[in-house]
Image 1 (cartoon, each protein chain N blue to C red):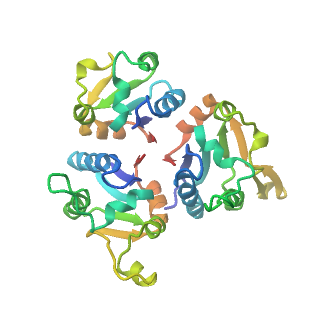
Image 2: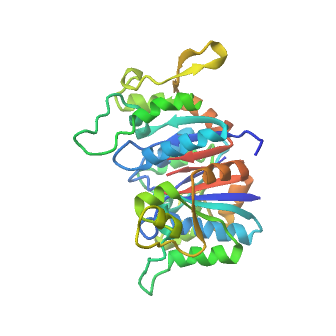
Length: 135
Length: 130
Length: 100
């Protein structure tokens, strides 16, 4: 297993209403150990996964939003958010969790993990991948 | 060509398991190899031998077991998803203090790493789900 | 690249999302409830007519048949394939993306 493949995890579900976001994130975190070229894409309701201020105290659900903050430590540091999906939902980047990673090759400078991309850019990114998972 | 297939929904509620089954049969008929079938989310419910459908309907679980035996398929149920949904083999049942196991013949329980490995080792990975 | 869509366009954004992201020259296969998107004369037919100028669209025959949808009710240009054709599409394309 020496070859490195390009993995994209596409997230299209909102959190809590279904389990896909939570169990999808578990795949990403486990997959990080395999040292592949990994990125995530958030499309449609998937952008709601990154919404700031999730608080499940009163709903009794498991709040897994803090786990997104760990992605940078697992070298999952390219989170592509489709700009059109965000705008359709009345959100801006300021509504999303400020996720960052530390760039080892740049004196551990803290850099943002979330990148807003247009639908056209995302279309090109899809074509570059070797393996695509959809959650 | 080497295929792997991910099944994300349980039997009967959603067609995903049926579609995955027929796709795999067609791939085998065409001479392709199936590296692994990985059951995730509610898809782990395809791997319980307690399933008892009415006699006039297809038996989705037995169908997987039979196809697995006939073609030596690696049918893997995700351990984390299985624990949440009450699917256990003898080892898992013992480890979690349960009074019995329910895994169907031909299935095995293992970790998510098996899915990532399938993505790395296979020429194509197909996802069937909701 | 092969895209599969398994949702009815009357109930889900999956087909629209897929068509919005599929590159020119892509193959798109409608399966399960996705085959309802292949019907002629619907509110979504114009979207598919437009898409057919740039991508190839297929519908899974067994799923059409199960739902009582004859081939003469499909949008012109949509091709019907069986599971053998599904396997061929998955082999011929470099990867498969499932728009669930």
